[in-house]
Image 1 (cartoon, rainbow, N blue to C red):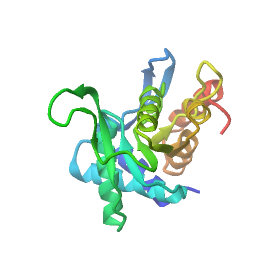
Image 2: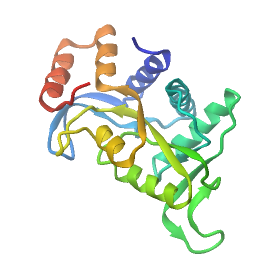
Image 3: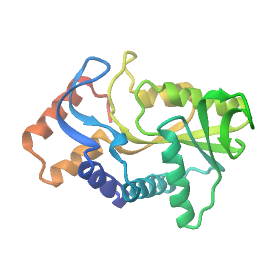
Image 4: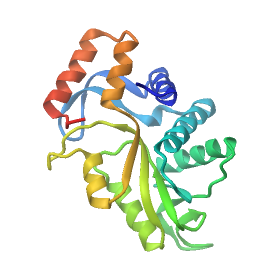
Length: 215
């Protein structure tokens, strides 16, 4: 059963064309029947709604944490929105983010915001190769913090070269929990109940049969 925050998130994604359907050639060379681009969220109201969805997913996960971290670049507005959403719910949590290039003047360094400490949840958009998340894990560990989880928007549940999904690889390699707001299966359930085009649903299901991992 879909949670209310998942329904609101998927409505938001469709309304802002974060989620589109058709034929899209991915970086992997696969032709996907859907495309997901969280960068389409570009207004204050939409970002506030997105931050609320992330915050509710994080709370629902039951993960205990001391601060939030957003990897450059897409994670920066996301972690800010999530921290604000938590503050509106009475949870004041510190957050930080990184620069991709170290600053050589002023305070210097690559980290901005609260000093990394304790248990950290990383906030990012979609896990593909996982490069940014792995860098964030190393950065936080080097700073003496303990990355415990990452919250992302969508788990495509799609096999990589290893036969595992990007989420499965991340959990195995980095020893952190990855919490998606929605998975492809969640998305399919919502679309089917919302009266989506049958051909679109069939195309996504066929794609998952070919490339998907076990849910």
